[in-house]
Amino acid sequence: MSQLNLVLPGIIWPEIADYEYLIKQLDIPNLSKLCTKAKLQKADFCYSDFIYSNYDYSAGSLATSYAKKLNIIAEFSSFLIVEPTHLRADRDRLLIAEAELLQLNTEEAEIIINAINQHFSGELKLYLLEDDLWLLGTNLDLADLVSYPIIDIVGENIDDFLPQGKSRLALHKILNEIQMLLFNLPLNQQRQDEGLMMVNSLWFWDKQNPKQEVTSMQMIQTNQQLNQQIININSLVEAEEKTLIINNGYFAARYRDSFAWTQQMNQFEHEVVPKLLKLLSSRKLRQINILIPGLDGGWRLSVKSLDLWCFWRKKTWLELMESISSSNQS
Image (cartoon, rainbow, N blue to C red):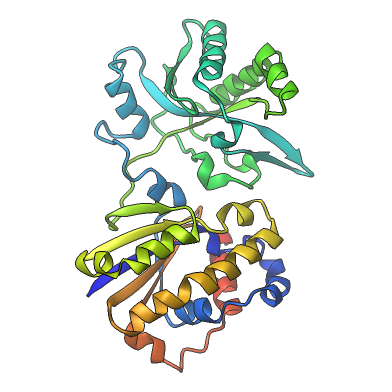
């Protein structure tokens, strides 16, 4: 028998006040059974811990490891991961877009990087890692840096998540200068004419090696991919532990699109969860762990086959989600 870890970042709707309305739009008896029968434990992980778990941290942090790989470790005292992005105002919030939405190509990335490097010549330097993932070299003291990858703060007011630490004011000043530079960049006018998002800002962050105990992680983008994993029961049974990252509903929840979120939750319920319950009740799976990452820590819901018969555990889906969401926001 084996153990299956399901990383479900999209299972939590971020606004507690909306739950009573949303629960009427959900038809999830199987998912509710799976979650409310589980043993609930607080955990210390966020979504980016899983997304960046297989990256190189051999030099201490993700940014420093990239600098070492590029053989530029001696050129600057500090390094940061950089994501190009698009910022937009939404009432009283300033929202950030994940870099993949920009659809940047290598030529465009190099144009932006060269413009910024010329502007800050001798002060800092950008290096291309991927079209939408760059590296910044600087001599600022970033020993106490607190920062967040974009994937963790999508849909949130970024004013609450700007890089913090003794060099925060200098970093904010650099960001402001870059935003003004990008505003006047001809490339952005060209992108706007082509119906593409303007690259109007960058986002700085770094990450230490995530302390994850889960293994064999695989990102699942669609229910069809997940169904193929579940159908192949032998692969689940033979492996002692397997982890599937399922982001159904994540971006809908982060962007507060309640219609898309309830639709994806209901689809997950009807197309996937019954198969999971069948594997668990037949003891072809020893245990299912539902891992729910959050900004300030996450939750682990562990359920075994015998737990499904614990009728005295009467917590409802609404009560469970409200308690988890409330704890994450406290």
